[in-house]
Image (cartoon, rainbow, N blue to C red; front, side, top):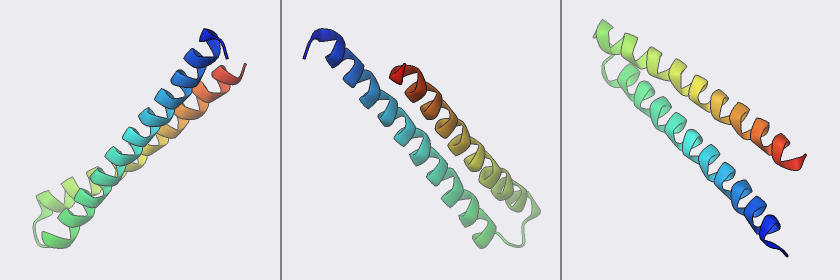
Amino acid sequence: MNNNDLALERTKLANERTFLAYSRTAIMLFATGATFLKLFAQDLAFQIIGWVMLIISVLVFGYGLFSFTRISRRLRE
């Protein structure tokens, strides 16, 4: 195994770590949004914040997945 192979492997692992960080962030946003919706059901402001967090969590996860697949494809070439 030469230095180029090791560098490629490190880059693949960094890409996976980055995807996991996006996933972790999306899960926390989703959980926080769901908590706001459940705990503050009577307060409209918290309801709006909760729904916004749920939407942002899906977008963050989608962007992380898109970025991961794009970089993985580049690395395979």
